Length: 89
Image (cartoon, rainbow, N blue to C red; front, side):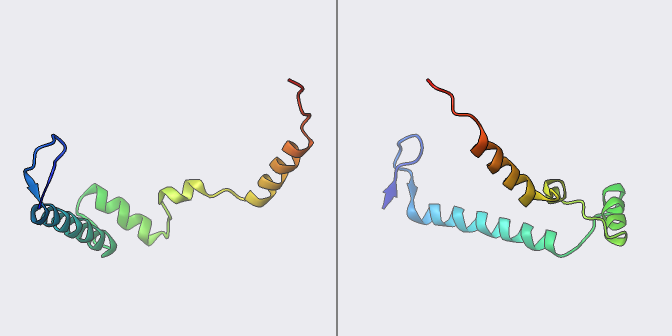
């Protein structure tokens, strides 16, 4: 059963759409497996990755999101907003 594509044409049938989806899913799964394998590329990029692994350096983007004492910050913000004066409008 043809399904209209983004231009409104009845040119993409269900089999084609499912095939495209399956190929995309295989590509994403393959990339995830490749990056999870621990392979380091040759050259300067691989050198940086190998150094970080040997020195046990966590260079993920989540490293920059870590905030110490986050619960204290949240509690003080809640207390500050609770004590804030209510402006009359």
